[in-house]
Length: 538
Ligand code: NOJ
Image 1 (cartoon, rainbow, N blue to C red):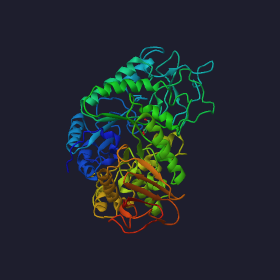
Image 2 (image 1 turned 30 degrees about the horizontal axis):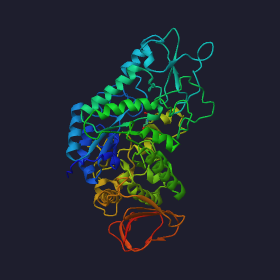
Image 3 (image 1 turned 90 degrees about the vertical axis):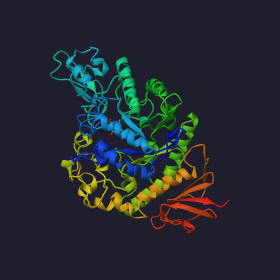
Image 4 (image 1 turned 135 degrees about the horizontal axis):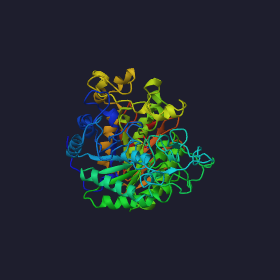
């Protein structure tokens, strides 16, 4: 199935499918997904109707943080393939009308990156050390960390250099694992290097970059203690000494200049966990990044007021800078939607309703692999299988993110549900994974997969995706209902305990109710935890 690549800026209203390479599809049978496996799976994604794929990091890495500890930004880790296969992946994607977005990890490198190895071997104050954030410790012996900053994964954000450094025993900053030292973004070499990395992948034909920890690049030079005033995790608040500092924007302006030097509509999407929507909008000003993930929407619970506030704040703040919103329900860092919304039948039902709500909103939408299959979080992984550093760094207090990263099921009858030809799987799949496999759902007209496919196709044909195309307006249908019109089309979600009536005559073009989604329905009511798309008769 081949579609021409449209010429308008695709990223304003695209549906982007997040491929988590380790868990998408394993071609070589070692139990870890790979680039060749992704090439094999592209047909299924084109069939789903998405416009683009975003690939999590596949670069050489010791894999301490599943590839977010990059040791070479211009290569492919042999675990996943090689550059030739990457080039094939880009060509095959483009042939199917799919854009390709890759991950850029600028806040930190791996401790095995040549730069960090050289920094350890060099003296305090040397140019090699100045690419990172080395500082002397506190106390007469320098044996206390420079400040009280914490790692997002638990424990202190500083590690003292030992063995290599008989003179000073400096400490280095790592907002994530100790194997992920933070770079110093005031350093000219760091700035130049990443611009070059952008060019490397742009030259290979990528259509965009997802910017990891975009809000973390700049640190308060005074490195003041948090002193309990600021949290490390969650949505960051203004004034934080290492999140969302104004200096990050100059970096993005320089990247934008690099990107704009290339033909075609290339784009950036920022990962920035911010509490204030207006602060987030600063990342998507016209000379900075194009889009930013909407975590405010992802974090809203299944509640009318919360969801409505998230939508309002997002649309208002983005309109102020002329940028399109994004809508995200899940990714590789958060508990899967079905489980977050309550699990079981109710969670599944709500996840279906949330998907239609998301696809009806103006802007672009992200689908995390397996979301279209309604996969739940795997909550019973054996502790010995867990790999996320969060689990060990919090002494097991937090389970970590492995439960949303379990390899996805393709084919009920095959080993590892078709994930891997040998049946190997880097995280064990639950026993009943086959019930959710893609092949089964393809044969079931009421499946989550069919709902996603229909919603994505309809969204395009109804022309509601583009922010300007169909003006957004809330409809007041009572306290339990989220309803809005997009031009000639209405999306209505009932979060209340009793059915609600449709607002007038018209046709239901899609319903998330599994009992009704296989056909247009003549039902005049919308049941609990159901979204319908409705075209009122004029
Ligand atoms: C955000 C990524 O999504 C996450 O998986 C990673 O652990 C951190 N950034 C650190 O790179």
